[in-house]
Length: 244
Image (cartoon, rainbow, N blue to C red; front, side, top):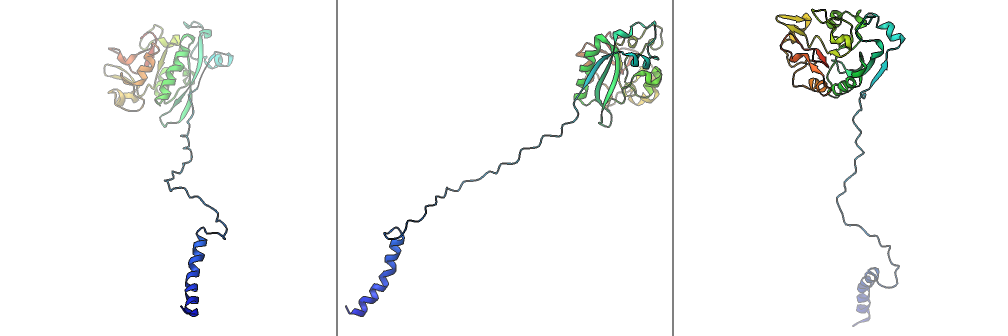
């Protein structure tokens, strides 16, 4: 082999030696080792779901009849009524109206049934059963007809039974008339109020009470009975503890 050919072969082999050293041969610094994890699917955690907007909660209160309320009730109570004021209670309950707006209603009932009444309306609020109006009958001068035409739900009123002279269960604070337009009083061909005629056939409309619905069940759970089950006259708005 000539000297020129030997030099050429040496030049060709030089890169091989360098490459061998670079792959872990001696004389070069060890490279930093970077471990790469095996690729795995990544599930990105979603932000916690925001809770649904919490609407107003049900609330109720029970109070004795104070001087201010006594003055306000001057039309619905008077000396000689079958129940003294100290046996009555002022009750407030949360309800929804026919537009779904949450409101606070008021009733006066007998002390013995006040707690039960708050439970009944808690059940109705949970079902979002609508109540048009719930004000003391005194806001209508204790005129039952005026209260009914206003579709007002009411309880205590020291008055006689409809068409008679005996005390009504309302005079004892043990009866409630609920949405009286949607749930009219029916006797023969008479429907009261007249504005309730469209509901005498018991259509499936908001506020209309049916025998198998949650309204009747809520009252029945507290021992109250529904006038809609009377053989006649039928009082779809009326609930009472005595069934009268």
